[in-house]
Image (tube, rainbow, N blue to C red; front, side, top):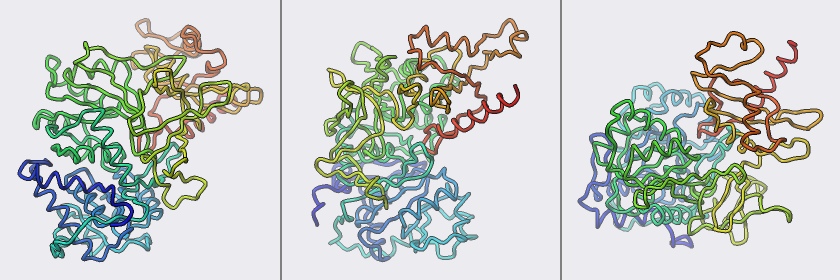
Length: 555
C-alpha cells in the first residue's frame, strides 16, 4: 500500500459499485451507465494499462472533450499509480507539445477535439511517448498520423480481470498534473496529490451541500482544476453526472431541462451566456430544478447576479476564490440563498476590494504585510497546496509540508469577521510616484460607469513617475467615444464618453488621485487572454505603449 494509502481518489468507486450499483450515474448523449458499469469501465482500463506495461509514476496525457470515458480514464490512471496530465483541447500544437515535453507522458489519450494538431505530432520528437490511444470512436484524421493507435476496446481486451488488483500510488502521492497558464500564457504543470483533491472535495460537499440526489452538469472542462475538483466531489457523494462535450449555452440549457440538472459550476462568461441565451428563448419562464450553482474564475457583477437569480430562482448561488496551485477553492461566499429572504450579497467595496468570503474548513490563510498595514500578500498552507511545479526548480516549487506557506500572488486583507478581501495581483502592481497601485481597483471603479463594458489598467514607463496608469477601455455599442476629432460630429442621440468624463467619474467615485489613469485608450477589440481566460496584461501593456508612441510621433 505504501505511505500514501490514507488517501486515494478511487475510494469513491466503492460507493458507486454498491449503493449506486444499479442507478444511472453518467449520461453522455445516448450513453447511460450505472454505477456498476462505470466501475467496471474503470477497472477494465486499469487492468489493461498494467498489461501494457505502465508503471507507478508514469504520466498519461489526455486531450479530449468532456465525457464519462474521460472520467473513467482519470480514475483508471490513478488506480494503477500513474499520473494524469490533462491537456487543454483549445491549445495549439505548439502549446500541447510544450506541455508534453514538460511532463514527459508515456501515453497520449485523445479524441476529435485535437484534430487540428494531432497529425502534426508525427513530425515532432517526444521521446517519452510510447502509446497513442483513441478515446472514442475512430477518427478520420488518425490514419494520416500513426499506424499503431490503440483503442479502449484493445486495451480492455488485454485485461485479465485479476481479482487481486488494488489501488497504487505514484511517488509523493501525486495523482494529477494540472496545467495553469498564469498570466504569462506559458503552461506550467502543477502536481496535485490525492489528499489535496479529497480535502477539496469534502469542502465543496460541506459548503455547497452536494449529495447523492444531485444531477450535476459538467460545464467546465476536465482539463481545468475547477472541473476536476467538482467532478471528484460528485463522485464521492454518488451523484449523477451529465456530460456535454464542451460548454455552449444552448447545449447546457437543453441538458439542464432534459435531465433535470440540479447542480453546475460557472465562470462569469458562462453565466452571462446562459442568461443571454435563455432571454432570447423565453422571457416569461425560469429554471426551477437547479438548486446549487458555484461560480469561480472571477466575481459576478451585481447585475449578472440579479439576472442569474431570476433565471435560477431556486438555486443557492455561491462564489469561490482559488487557484490551480491550491487545488481549486480557498474561500467560499454565498451570493444568494432563496431560503434566506431572497437577499443578494454585493461583495464589492471600493476601498477594500472584493470580498471572496471565508476560508474553507481545511484551509489556513494569513496576510503577510509590513507593520504599518493590514493589507499584504495572501499566503496559504495545508494538504490542499500543490506538491510542486512539475520539473520545477526549488526556487519556484511549493511544498505542502508542515510550516511551508504558498504565496498565492494575490494582495488582500482579512477583516474582523474572517472574510477575505482581494485587492489585486502582486505581479500586476503599478508603481507610480512612489505609490503602489493595483489595477483591479482602478478597473472596478471604471466598470461602474454605465458606458463601460470592459477595462484593463496597466502601468506604462514614465520618466517622472516611474510608471503612469493607463486605462484601456471598451464601451457599449450605443455610446460614442469623443476626442478632438469627434466632438463636433457626434450624433445628438448618441451617449457620449471621453477621457475627461472618465477621469471626472473616477474622482466622483472617490478613487484616490494618484490612482486615476493619466491616459485613456479606446479599445475596439477583445482583450488578449490565456487559454484559461486570464487577461494577458503584458500584451495589453505592449499595445498600449505602441499606441501612445504612435500618437506622440504624429503630433
